[in-house]
Length: 182
Image 1 (cartoon, rainbow, N blue to C red):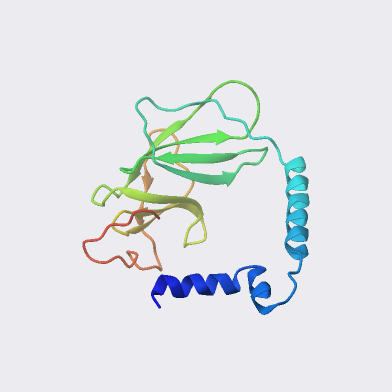
Image 2: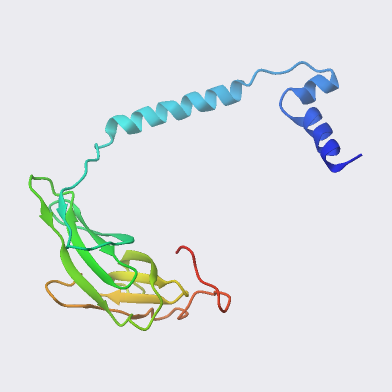
């Protein structure tokens, strides 16, 4: 018997009600599945009713700015939170979103310092850093793990980045390989 014939026979005897039909038993209705789907739909309806509708935020981004990374920042007292958009080479902009009100919000530009010798950035997270403070955690295409501690920069100040303390300098990546996502 060839492999595909063996598998076909296994499917015939074990899938759904066919298994019972092959044994001479009577198929049992799928009451459990129906009940589970109905319960799931009820939960989804409840969640949708209480969810706040999402709407695009009008943001004025810097000219010629083409970010590929997005990091959600800390919540702000009074509503909303910050979002950082970053290019793979370390240029970024932050904007306060979710605060309501009309009009367009201007994003504030910043640059990352201490990463120019590294491959392009592949991942970013804005939150608790290894030292217990807030900041950015970054991963490069080669697996370098960096920390940019401190509050978001304002004006023309660069956000200083360094290898993450208390952690390996790089993710375990095969030599010569590149990460595709982080």
